[in-house]
Amino acid sequence: MQLIGCLRSKVLDWLKNKINMKFKLAMFVLLIIVIILVINFHSIVGTIRKEVKGDIASKTFYQNKLANLNSVTPPENAVILIGDSIFHGFKINGESGTPIVNYSIPGDTTSLLLQRLPSLNFSENNRVILLIGVNDLGINVAATEIIENIALIVHRLELTVQEVIIAKLILTNGITRSNSQIEIVNRLIAKKFGSDHRILDFNIDLRLHIGSAWQYTTDGIHLNDHGYEILEQVLNTVAQNNAK
Image (tube, rainbow, N blue to C red; front, side, top):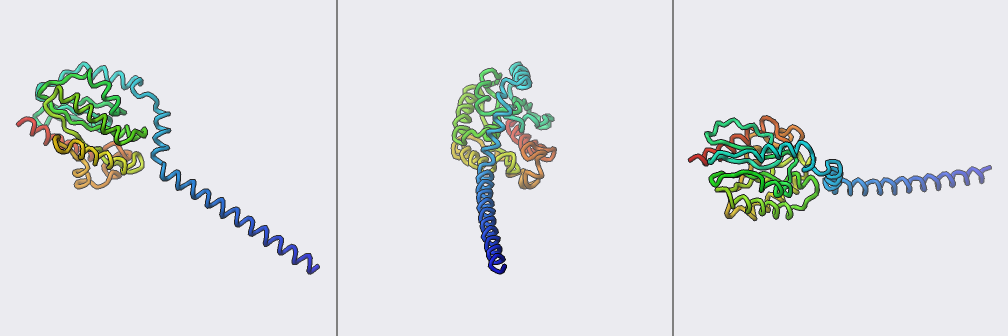
């Protein structure tokens, strides 16, 4: 009986060790999977987002907005905002004394803007403020491609308008978009355009007067009322300088 009891004990110990080893191996594999998912989180989400949203340009809201903008003729001395939903949400109050016209469309990307640019109306005395690229990052467009597209946009605009002012991308909460990717784009904007264009960095004022994106956005990317108050102050300053 002692022999049987000893054998049973050894078998049980062997089974426990096997189970522990398999459990540890499973936990190790799970940890590796989690690490891979975390590292590639924004890329994975971007791929899903691209598939779910489909072709934004074919959506009814985009086509309707495009048709409305194509019929606009801006005043001779207007400051024109061109971008995506960040600029689109800006409510123009006219306090600057200079007319501000908004040509922005939610969901717009640099490639879509290049396509719709020829149909927009401009005056040679207009100044354009360009804020575009965050939706490109949302569908995994490379930072270098974003800059190449922005350069084409700027070139085409400068054939028509007096000045193009380029805004750096606004930092998010780090979940909706990768802030490290945004910072790469912003550094490339400064490097590519900083020597011969005015660069606006809304992040400086947002950080100084409000704090982080958790405080100046509604969902981690789109600005709340407080965030737009800061944008308004910066844009009104630009518009007032334009009027001088």
